[in-house]
Image (cartoon, rainbow, N blue to C red; front, side):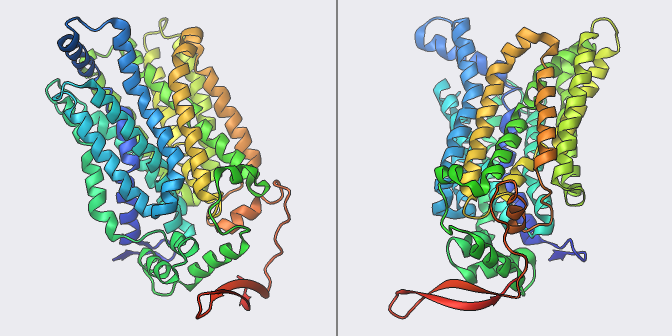
Length: 511
């Protein structure tokens, strides 16, 4: 069944791949960002109870703080391990195969985290958080790669934004399930972690019946028949010769048809500014201050006079705004483009962080000032999700041709998780030193990121991967390929009856 307009034809196969791919991947990442907040007191009580049973004495304050810090931060360390391993797994299993394998990490983590209390082992919780971090690290690289390669170019941004939308939906789901009326109780907190297995099992029940990335099949597995069938299912049409030719053209244009290593990518002058752009964009994604905003939310709400028992319900508005902004971004990205949304998002964050700094400094002098502070927090979240929250992952897939893509995602993922870890480690010290002026650090990051993107990043909407690479040719100081030619000589390879490879010169039309 195909929902079609003249240009925006979206097949059920493509939507299923985007939704279920993201459900078992980025949704779990978002869910794990928020799920530990509600049961924090119960987990700490479990730590103390277990310690008393083992050693006959209560858990010291410093040890308790250390164990909780490990539970929170080891998620990012696992994410880094996952990002570093993804290019090797993808090379062996492909995009879809990597996503399917990744579900095993989610199920194992769900078992460890949900059974840790019953086994009286806080070590199981720590290992479980590490493993679900590995799952998220792999997911945030493999999923955007898969979505970018299965989408027609006129809706690559729209399909790619499923990654961001499901991250936000995961955060919101974690907040909802953590409410006291649901699973945010001392007798039920382990079910919050058991829930991790459900999205993974749903993905396992659907994704095996959907095609692998046709670009991967054609360019890396040399399976033209499989790539053709995959294109036909994803696009909902029988004639996919144009899409196949686009991939063939990219293959002919690449200097190296084999997947390059990270070291080769770092040394390649042909993609130098693409790599710099992705590193800066991904660093700004984490260092722009969104994670730090959660430190202030509850405090500002208390200052506004809201009762402690209703804070969780008001905090739900942050998750709801986040999800709504991500959905709107996904709907308009193909009209507005990646570059304007990114620049708008970072610029708006800089403005609202500046206003928040002003409001925080007058918080005690004016009774209604905390309400303005909370509105600024919602505006910062909406600004982030309008572009910076998802487009960096879309860009990582768009700025690199096939042979560079796995290594590029490995570098982008490493920058992402190291920046995530740095914010968690350094922000408490920044906040302690600068107090309410701490957000000015993020104003600087957002402003510099916007300026860089304005001058360097080309618009990528509705462009082929070759077009995007060529738009960087001048800044990379490499020759720009000649314009369209009627005929060109193409060196291809064929295998003869004896299994030997022959070089054959053939005439092909250029598109």
